[in-house]
Amino acid sequence: MQRVTGIGGVFIKSDDPDRLKAWYRKHLGMAIEDWGGMSFQWQTAERPQPEGCTVWSVFPASSPYFDPSSAPFMVNYRVDDLHALLQQLREEGCDVDDKVEESEFGKFGWVMDPDGNRVELWQPPEVQSG
Image (cartoon, rainbow, N blue to C red; front, side, top):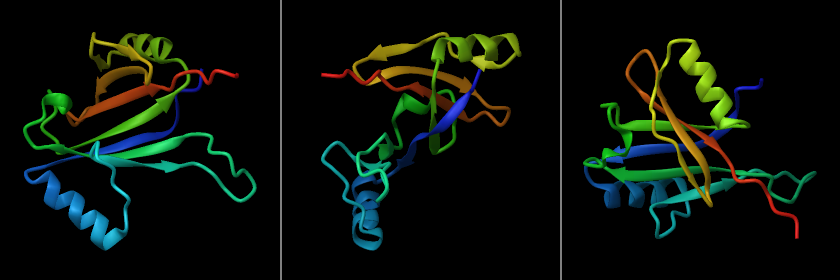
């Protein structure tokens, strides 16, 4: 079973999210959207149709979304089969959150690394052909 297939997102906490987003806009030219972040589309000249994206977003420092981690960041990793990977991680003795979220955005699960950082695992939704 392939475990991680890419980085789905990078999330940063800030005491002043608006100031931080403005800095990234001004100094790095990032087109941050109203929802608080942006998506980097995965495409090349050889493959002009995006095959996915990596999300970058700022959260308020008070956000409980990273709990129980005290780190001011969280990395989201793309996976192919969230439930199978979470089961494998449990069998390996990892600290896996019991909660799994499933929505139109995909399936989300969490595990703590040995340094106490919360790691988000994301299985993107299947693309519907139309």
